[in-house]
Length: 64
Image (cartoon, rainbow, N blue to C red):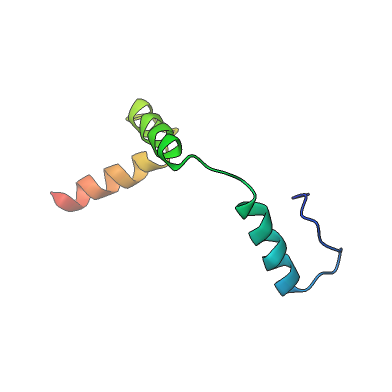
């Protein structure tokens, strides 16, 4: 399902190595990823679709 190159009944160590290889093989533009995340949070602010809305409302209740 996750397209990792391991046998069906691999050990935990084999799975860790396969997952590690998988993630190190993908290049991520960190600046672009953070910018897109911030844009998404900002543009969804006040909607119930963002999981951060619940965190924001909980934090504001604790500050008062």
